[in-house]
Length: 103
Image 1 (tube, rainbow, N blue to C red):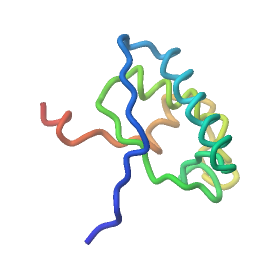
Image 2 (spheres, helix red, strand yellow):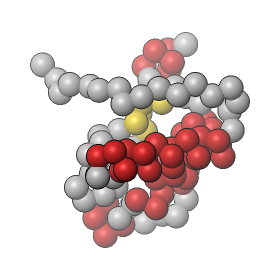
Image 3 (spheres, rainbow, N blue to C red):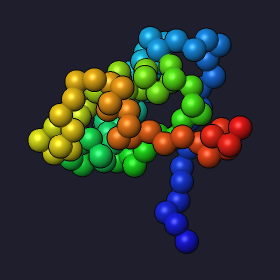
Image 4 (cartoon, one colour):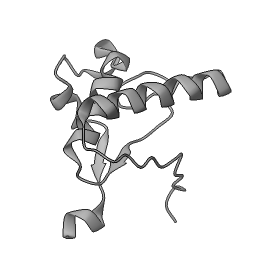
């Protein structure tokens, strides 16, 4: 039996805009830290991270907005990821939804 999977939240946005998604992920990070006292961080990017991956539905704006938002959380000395390019960074923490890939 695999590890449990938890959906933290869902957001419905009526436009595919990278800037809107960045704002969304910035606000989610801020709200979670205010509520829990702990930041959202990806294990692959940050020492002490608490998330394995972000499941995405193949919406490029969503992936790029998230990468823009989480770029500042990358710790290159820990992760070994030496980039300032959000497009490259996205490869390390996003996973495409299997159902969307098959469509």
